Amino acid sequence: MLYERKGTLFRTFLALFVSLVWQVIAGASIIPLETSRSGFFASEGYDVTPDGSTVVGTISTLSDGVRAFRWRRNSGMLVLGQVGQSIPNDRFIASSISDNGEVVVGEAPDDRSGFRWTESAGFTFLPSPFGNTEGRANGVDAGGVFSIGRAVASTGDRFEAVIWSGTSLTANLGFLSGTTSSQALDISADGAVVVGYCNPNDHRAFRWTAESGMVSLGRITGGSFYSRAIGVSGDGGVVVGRARSSIGNEAFLWSSTTGMIGLGDLPEGAYSSAALATNFDGSAIVGYGSSASGQEAFIFIESTIQPLKEFLDGRGIDTSEWSHLQVANSIKDDGLGGFWITGKGINDNTTNSEDAFLAHVENNVVVENLPVDVVWTGLKQANLSKDSVVGATYELRRSTTLDSASAPIVQSKTGTGAALMFSVDDTGNTSAKSFFWIVRQN
Image 1 (cartoon, rainbow, N blue to C red):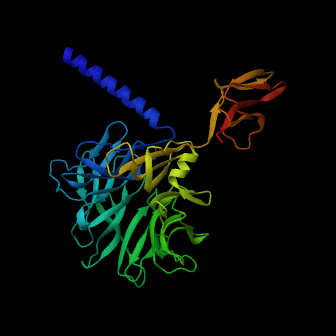
Image 2: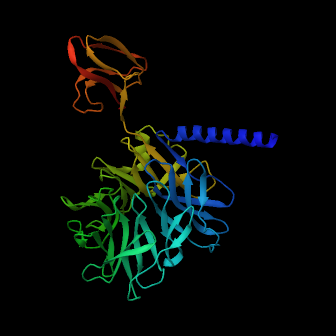
Image 3: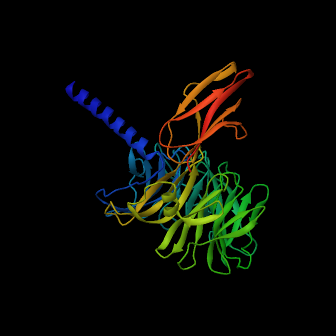
């Protein structure tokens, strides 16, 4: 009994500790996913779930080479293994994860196989049109149903972009005219849009839907037709990647209205950038560029490309323990107007050569209800107190619908660090009204 009670107390303490740690890191922050744990010396995050609870990628071990991992906020790092079966000690990459964190897809060494992994079933190697399992899986849709990648074509002498449903081959996507090989690199949230590239004779980016088939995305004005579509927005409307412009290899954005446009590069480096991922509506893009520090992670937002580290610093996130952020591989909306971003960088507080990171960028606009759910009719007057942060803007608004951007402002004040007083006088107003604050963190 004593042992059981001790175990229960320990588990309770551990659960509380993990919960408290997550409350700290779930705010605006950047953390390493693997510290100086025995046997591991480098890691890289490739994808993250929208709630920021789960990241997948690769981790380098001293004994097993490069292995796929799944990191969870409540359980830490798990090196993926096959249920009831040993896995060779060579390179496995976890490329993508479903939104609920249950389905992981990736590649086994040297195109030996694309795989689908779940905790209950372990690895399932995905079939090719040729009848073997040679290929790779690069992405999975939000629901974990459809995954995409490349597999040996039915002729057995080339690779072809494919879609799997669960563990079954669903579609061969074919090739652009004049090419003989293709690969799918990303899929939209609903599985309807697939992007990738065809080769040889210069790589050519494509976008595929069941209705239109495989369509070339063209080129950056003045550049060549060398391009790769690497990421697609969750809604399928924006494609990002890397193309050859008149200056050099350049990150690009494509939409049906803009065509392919270059995003530029970071200053002071050799001209070489690539856009690797974008959020649901294509409004924020991440990848890597070239700066005076070498390869460096960037974010492209509000029509501006800038180092990710600089952007995080500007949003009040402490990046002082990171001397360098090398690449950002994935960005997901957090549902509250902010983002989760994962990639790799150099953390000065660990002995690893590189660490996977998870960054949370919070929205700078927060909607807050009154302390009680107040709906007022008729004669009502009140003085309301609101704790404030220096420099933030606090707008008290009145509307029948909370969160309404058109809701009239009752009063607006700038934070002083002390409590702000707001006066409400709804005398004679006979219609129901809800009051709420909009807080703008400047």
